[in-house]
Length: 423
Image 1 (cartoon, rainbow, N blue to C red):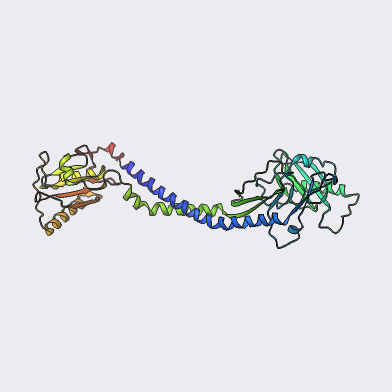
Image 2 (image 1 turned 180 degrees about the vertical axis):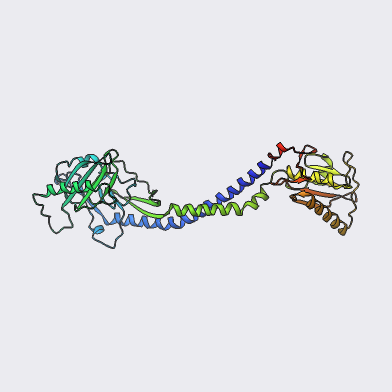
């Protein structure tokens, strides 16, 4: 019984602790999320507004698409904080990407496109750029990867074309081999204008420069808001779309470790601080004394006991101990058990009531270990004063003269050794 009581109290405490933990985390996260949400939205919209795309028509040959997009307003402004990823919604071509999050959902590259450059060749793209590209397969710790390298031959931002020498293809192959030799390193160094290393099994980008031409091989997930977790950091992800383009930006909203510490601290504080409240509101059994008229109507029950007088304190102390170890109860003094005749006690004046109550409290405190929580008052009936002792159910085990008593129906009995552990 006591175990169930203690479990209920701890459940209430844990519930309070979790509630406080959730509130603290929500407030802390909201303080980071709201400004980040607004900032990312502005960044995406400004990026989309600065880029114009033009349909080329059938007269213009463009192997990878039928439009070109002018990025000069974005890339020529060093003070402009653009979106982190920008893709063509129709072709899934990366107009640009920062490639800073290896585990992010957009870090995939179309393997079919990459394998189309096993022999070096040139190609033009939606950005108006023309690249000389080369790719080859390699082994990386037992896993197959595709390595692509490229040199930029022409860009709308260039004053003229780059003069590519006859040995450029051999240089691209050498640069691919150089990258392959660095695959086990955390960072890859390359003189190529752009490069990428892609897992052949999944198409996930292992590393890339972010400048090399690439296509996203999956269906675009254009949800406006999402979260991304990487390297112990939580990032807010926000996307925006125009007729032709899809922009995505990320902003860190804090370390998971920090949120974890705050959450654990808030939970412990909430659980411990609210334990007294849980004890108060989590009590089982009766929570208030039984009214005198109700007790006289029902007689003795599991919650009501009558004593004519207290010649000896032992019977009274056994009842108080049993009530405390059970579901609480009310002991009336001055009523004859069985006949329910009211004879009252000698406590007509406030001083006598005070002496009577103080004597009861002292006796209970000295004889019952630990002392239970009791309330004593003096209702009256037919000009007779009745002593009423209300005993609250307790989460502790209480003993009198070394014995643990419980209330069973209208009787009080003491527990044997094997039963005490279940109290």
